[in-house]
Image (tube, rainbow, N blue to C red):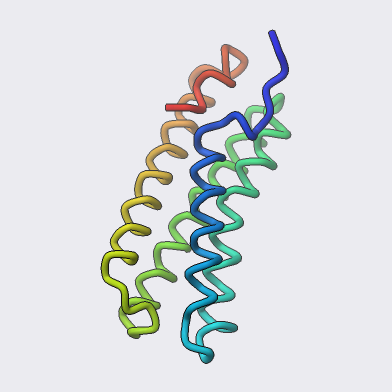
Length: 133
C-alpha cells in the first residue's frame, strides 16, 4: 500500500481551505477586533486542521488518533462561536459570509465526527480510505 499523507485527506483539505478563508476574512475586521476576536478565530480555525494533522501522525495509536480528532472537532465548535460573536457584535457585517462559514464548519464538524466513528470502529482497516467521507 502506498504511503498516504494527511494532505490527501478530504477533511484536511477542507479545514485548510477554511482556515485560509477565515484568516483573510479576519484581516478585514474593524481594528478593535483584529487582535481580539480576530486573533481567536484565526487560532481556532488553524487548530482544526493542525489537530487533524497531529492525529494523523499518531494514527498507529487508535486512542491518540481519536484524541486529536476530538480536539479538532472542539476547535471547529470554537470557531463557530467566534463567528457568532463577530456577527452578533456587527464586526462581521456580511450575512452571506457568516452563513457560508457556519455551513462549512458544520460540514467539517460532521466530517470529523464521521472520521472519528470510522477510526473507532475500523482502526487499521483502510484508515486512509475512510477520511474522505
